[in-house]
Length: 165
Image (tube, rainbow, N blue to C red; front, side):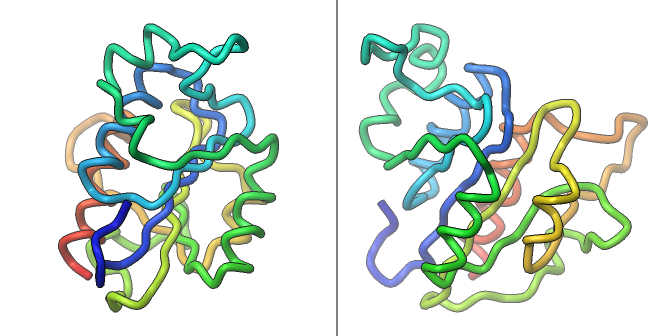
């Protein structure tokens, strides 16, 4: 849970396939005081069909699923619509002609609520999701590779908003 007076932050994961990535996001989200994680599409939840924590998830999350609220939804657009109704600003993190560098995003106040939306490890976020975002943010790449692991990207952007709000 976020500390009193801090910006309320949610994380939305769209079709993130790897249990290790999802577990890592949970652990980072706990460290940053994220209010809630939305697991959308085929993003796996921490629990298997028997209600037990998945071993691959547990190896990385180290119990973070006990401290960070989460919700499983079949559609990412449904999560975004829910968050918009709750007055969250929606920031999609994706390479796009319409993106701005994440560290140049609008400043937020401690009263603001923001949702950071991250996509599939290979395909990223679809246009339908990007159209619902208030702003598209991008992490500039300086090497030969064009992207980062999704869990690393979550950490970079999440802590920018946590420390820079």
